[in-house]
Length: 424
Ligand SMILES: *[C@@H]1O[C@H](CO)[C@@H](O)[C@H](O)[C@H]1NC(C)=O
Ligand SMILES: *[C@@H]1O[C@H](CO)[C@@H](O)[C@H](O)[C@H]1NC(C)=O
Image 1 (cartoon, rainbow, N blue to C red):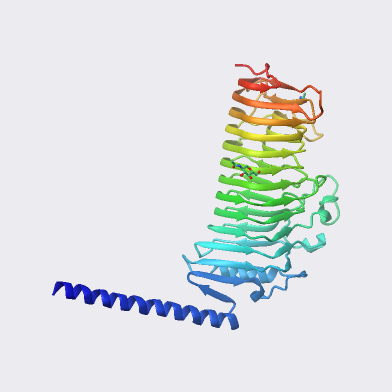
Image 2 (tube, helix red, strand yellow):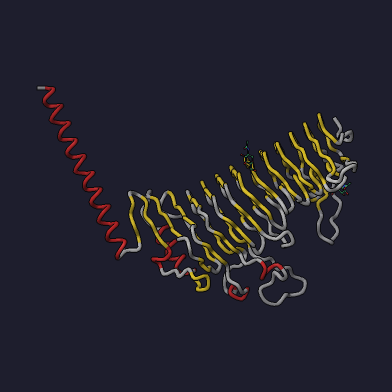
């Protein structure tokens, strides 16, 4: 009796189950068929697809597709809660976008942006009038966002590089060209595969983000283009950047104040200014930065920590491991006297406290003679600076290289050139 009951229950369950399966299958077929003819959304299981072409984008490289992208984004962002949205930017086309905000919070738990096509900025600065012009493509307050694909993002930098002002330059003021792409208050972000070229200023900025994995990017701008940093990280935590090529006119990657738990690996830098922490100012704090397995080719600086005089935060637990230099001007730098402007920087007894900084397993060549420059504040010493297995030669055969320090404390082992200036 018991066995019979169980068997019949099982059969019933199987039937119910297969009916559900058939229903799921039928509804999928139906919605696919419907949507391919009439609707702009396609449902595949729990992922809903939003193709910008269905929202009126032209993709001819000239027509302003901003409105179509905004509409497609709004639909994707307001789709089903706890589901997934996929915004498709199809390949074989080029979409011209004016400054645009992809804003959240969004209802779906995950949003995928598939960038298979190319995106270009306006070719005239006047197209920016009436828009915010700090940033071109802004993603803000979006959680669980993935942006990926083989598309190319072209910021039309050349129209900004000679003159960063949109219209006439007001004397005594400074114009800043826009950042090409910014992620602001984005949690659990994934960014991979894209090619970013010719940003007006910084190519990619992460601001107040928590949790990002960034990989397989190519970021390219001419060596002479001004302020075209590859990636800036500002007030962000748990950021992992790996396996990318960055060749621009300014910092390859710069890490600003308020950032912690930053991992950088497998980056090819150059030309450009290398990987930099700072310039730290005011109460800026940076902690737990791990830079490893990176190559710098013909960059001005290699790995650098810089802070303004008079700053009073701290930077600690910073390590650079497995770095290769090829004809880098100034490979290893700590600079607590950072002052790039012509205006005088007042002397101060305050300084960012630097401690637990490690340079390990570093080798290669420099095209200048001073290859290690640890210039710490005269009043606030750097402590526990560790150099281990650091070998830097001149890129010019037969030339001697040397290192210098001011108020740097720590230890050096297996270091060439020898660094006798490092105090215990
Ligand atoms: C080091 O980085 C290169 C790219 O520059 C990558 O191909 C390689 O797999 C990385 N090695 C390790 C051990 O991560
Ligand atoms: C080392 O860096 C300090 C601070 O920027 C600078 O003033 C000094 O000239 C540098 N030393 C050499 C030898 O380049």
